[in-house]
Image 1 (tube, one colour):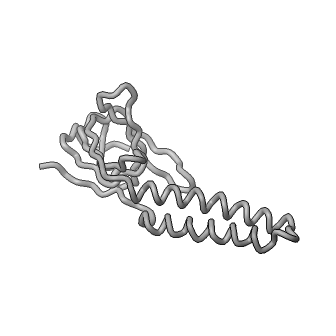
Image 2 (cartoon, rainbow, N blue to C red):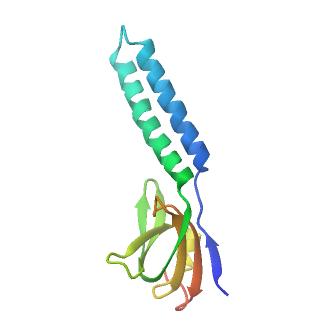
Image 3 (cartoon, rainbow, N blue to C red):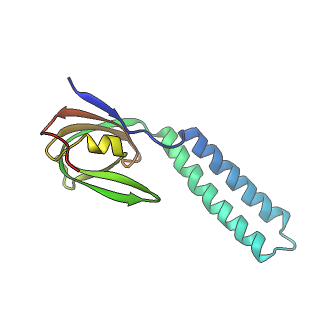
Length: 145
């Protein structure tokens, strides 16, 4: 029987989309309100809000429309890396495609897997880096750091 490991972290998709919409609205409101007398600070803040809002809104909307997809493969490599301010584990899967699939995982899930394990990974159809669950189908041996 496969062992299922949950990898889901971060805010819900709707919260990301809503935050993006709020940032974008506030940025546009700043531009409209200060259109006659812009200052460098206001222009900079508005630009940051508009870019961040657009990015979050698109990311959240794509995540809302993305459906879960399962990909099966064998772990070829595993290593720790830094993403943003967090240390995450990355496994490389041989899925039978031309290029192997690199999958970021949180620490508890990463340490449970070893090279040679056969796994199924549930990820978003529009964003393969957004991994929800990992099913361990065949264990190759004890996990090594």
